[in-house]
Length: 268
Image (cartoon, rainbow, N blue to C red; front, side, top):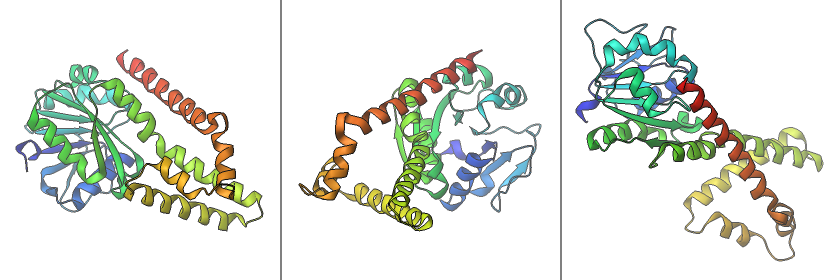
């Protein structure tokens, strides 16, 4: 394992930080190399050290920042004396830009990461971006994120905002779709609990099939829709005037705008 992961500080072990920590433990990252800094009492895997504040005389080789974005202004002054010049900072703070993080904490390489909710089961998506060309730092960041699911690098922070709108916010949109699909089934007379089970199983199976297929989802949709059949009639409703595509473009655009607003707020 790269030397940059010899001493990992994870700052914040809430929902997302805790999920990452559990995936690291399951993937064989040395627990004794990890220190969790959190003022609370988070559940941590065996062998991981927990402290409520940085210890004098200690420095990490990699810092993973997993607090809420609005907490940065409180956390940074506490961390900065211990982490200035740290080789790698990986931040999952939505909307907080590389320049802001570098100014606040003084890391040599700052990598922004955007994990989504299914990283908790190792089936997530993590977007990464950094202006740095430090190959060792980039490789270390990818090693930390690989146990979480699909890791995708994007070339710029605006592209990370777009990825966040799609993959970071996407689970919420999929959950809403599943709920709506189940409600539509119930409206046809199915018991609500049965409709929900059917909707969940349908989305799960269809997603697995699409992920394994060599054809695009668009081709798969057309393949299952026989001319004049019931699936085609339903698709005609979704496809009319690009209704579904328009709805999703508007949905992702709203999320992307909010990402930009949060970045502007973090610069203040």
